[in-house]
Length: 106
Image (tube, rainbow, N blue to C red; front, side, top):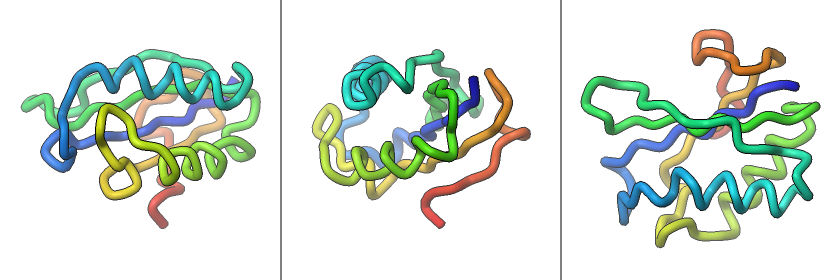
């Protein structure tokens, strides 16, 4: 499995509701027919403003554009993530941020 990480900055969200940590991965799983699955989340800074949501898929390269389209077309907990999210990918499973590269926004 490979990693797809959606990074959110709570300071940039219209509605910084922690339910997004569960609703976003659930929706991605549903959207992908479980080809992309939840793989946890982690706080990325000491202030707790930046959060990474880890997803896993057989092919991160194949799925990240589809996930971006989902982020652009739907709102999550009343947030338009097309304005605030970053998407990173890695060929490694459970990849650390340092092992990933940003694919969106370009």
